[in-house]
Image (tube, rainbow over all chains, first blue to last red; front, side):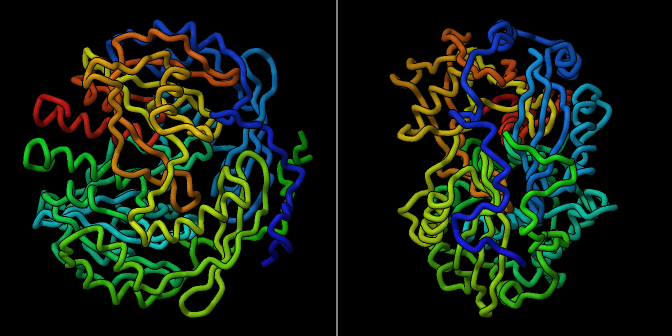
Length: 274
Length: 274
């Protein structure tokens, strides 16, 4: 593996900062569309699905081309758009996908937004496992990009050809050794949120499907973690989630935090959990 | 601005795929630590804050160096670690921060995890605004990295020198024109979650502080969006959040999705919202 010979070396110096950032990473100025839309705050649509059609009538940037400027596990791209005022505008993004797959996905996103029947396919699953005796299964994992152990729910990329349910069962086993219960509703019960969500939409198209599952009280399967994965499995009784959030001192992923907040609110306000 | 002359050009070919990915982007193998820790699933700590101290005793990769391989608004890095078994291991990551700031942050993260009194400072805020007449203020924003309009709560980077509260007030105004109410608790009421969360910890150290605020019923301030920001403000009555999540056909950010899910659960189960 090649590596920069000095810390300050940048090996793709043809990539310049195209979005000399102010607070939002965008050049300063005023934009009429938004002000015209101020009255939209009071919209009361008869159907939220109609919003997608309403969006179709708005001036929207058109993707002209996708240029790859860095390869590797994380690939970096320059996306060039034609803005509604006719000017070209380039934005940096990253993806784990290769150029052709990424371009195809970006083109499909434009259509997804306008055609509700076409659904985004998630890149990854985030699994919220709940035991029969009402504990949540979490992990502490050493995460290299933050040089720290970090609290999260089990999660992982969906392999090619896998369904969401297959990825859930595999990742749950690999990371925790827990098996799905099949006695709750006569079969493995996987409740998926109604759509995948983007993890960090200002930088990347990475999308994650959150799923809630019922698992056995103890891990019964062999874990199958990878050689450089450092994972410690632990559980938190649902009734203790408020205390966990108050006392936890380790860094945490946003998804785990917001999912635990929802449990915490129910426990604190109603003495029960959803 | 320079740009690759062909779509397939990669201008930092010295960066190779160091993490030839299987499902988790890591090389295959078995790791003893995890299996040793299987019994930890039954831990019942007297205090969750003690978990950070317990982590300190685990074998943990040590950061050796940080090399920058791509510059721009999104910077790409190679992080080289010494693993507990003595081997070196390199992982790709990205950050909006420059090399020195990023390295300093990574070094502080290692200490944050072990010293609960040292708290992570968030990069950005995500704002959940609720009106006096019980509506949530959301935005539809055209997001270049996904070539689509996307549902989100107002959000933005915290400027240098700003407090979280100042960033909340500024971003709320810039993106929506809404003002914080100061009549709810005698002053502007900003409820922050107990810690920031990482947006996508497998790739980046980007962290976001989620805050819940009370706002006026209508936007009273001038919006101040930037020239290439396409934002449409809208509101959803809290009682309609379950229907919104069912009917929404636009892509959505994970934070907005999980925050709305929490409201939805309360509405569906208790007829009220927290």
